[in-house]
Length: 113
Image (tube, rainbow, N blue to C red):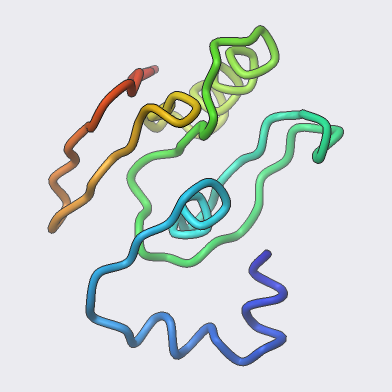
């Protein structure tokens, strides 16, 4: 995803933006300096990816449904990266970050090491 942002020369433009940034699904995780994607129909294996360095203090599991695959991925992130993981429920949860303060909206589970 970041490759496409760079391909279209949007990386520096996005980093210079000082207004509100919102994202759903891929638009949410790309805001993290590094993010992971759990295996599913679109991504056959667990993998870390480079994102935009807006946020660096946590990871996210989007579309969380509590599956074994998702829970194993969350445990892997906790073990390998040692940062909190916010799991936003499918169509029912979100997080807001305002000057480093995290607010959970709706169905959001928090996983700590």
